[in-house]
Amino acid sequence: MKQRTRARSLALQVLYEVDLSDHLPGIIFTQRLKDLSLSSDPKKEEELREFARKIIFGVIPIAEKLDSAIAEYAPDWPLDQIAPIDRNILRIAFWEFGISRKTPVKVAINEAVELAKIYGSDAAPSFINGVLGSLAKRKNEIYQSIVKGL
Image 1 (cartoon, helix red, strand yellow):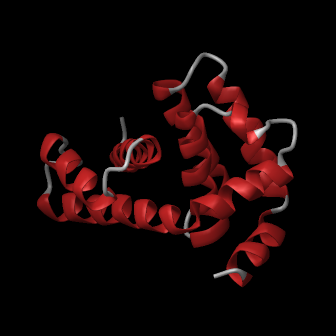
Image 2: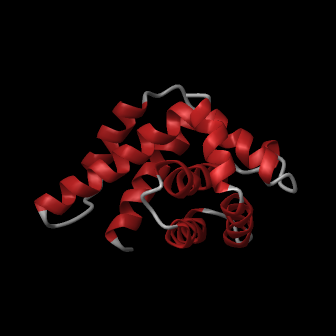
């Protein structure tokens, strides 16, 4: 697994646990970091930790808005029927290309599909790809609606 994919995986694990429990994200993040090395290079390790932290604390405050966008712009996939792991993969990818705008759309989608192959069901990769494709087409419109609400 590539280093940035490992950082996204760490963020996914934290977001998934936050979604399913009342555990605090900072504590979960710290615990996961004890169990996971992202790089053998200390400088790169710190960069990857910061990347994961930005994802986690970028997604959490706007998770409901991200979910609303998923529900509105990908209506073929009702939010209550999306598995929690898939929902968090979607949140991460859309946050990366649609909100932070520091990751190219294709990269974010490819990384999300890779995470879906690791953590999701057999159908998850194509599902994730389809939903993110729908969101990517409307990313500017969604960005405006989310940012206005902040």
